[in-house]
Image (cartoon, rainbow, N blue to C red; front, side):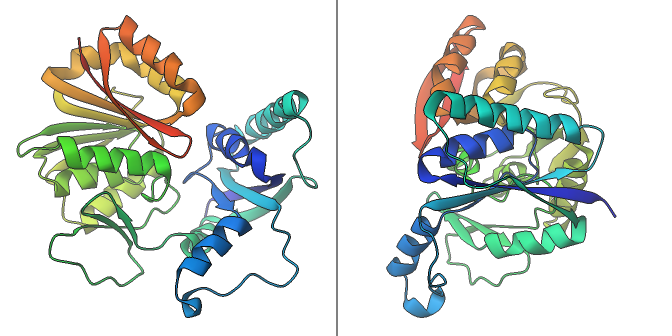
Length: 313
């Protein structure tokens, strides 16, 4: 059974996004968990009171807890040093925002998976997409496109803004007989969405063996293994031929590394959708795309996250 380290940082509200991004960029599995009491109370008040319990009396609404999980492997020490260095660098620029020390807790894969379930519920994305955890019940509407998955230790529940941006884009660009490459597939959610929307041939690639295993399991449960091929590989390595649509929900720095290979892997009239880009890095990615012959056709946003739809010039 694999062991994981849970890392939790308590911060002020103004540092919520930057802290989450630092933990995510350090290699957090399944993204990060953001426990924002103000957001919780806002949502609770908008729902029937019996659906959500009020926060415990005395809860400090000014404190946001950011939590991430990392495998206990040879890279762990480097990841933790990087997190501390980047948090300290931001505090040097904007002032102290951490509240108390960083907290650490060892968990097993089973413990982590069970703990994650409390944060992952049925979620509607775009016009028709519904993300359903395998352990929850949901009565689908006639026009729903339901994706059932168990993210396990792989990134991708469909609830993070970066994933939502890609799912909404797929609703717009997938046509019958579309060929799709999914770079950094994680749980396989984007590949599965493309298949549900009518794509005929999908190649999903991830450098992480855990993600590849999880994606294969989710795809097999959905009966999509004849449409989706999952391989372990770095970026577009492991894909043959060209695609009508390429999607990548990964870090901005990695997208910039990927961009030179995109034009040669797109069919005539093909599209590339890049997500995982924090707003501050939008211009960097756009300039890098222009240098390799790609033009940004459309920009979409959710909170501070940006999605870029590109085509060959």
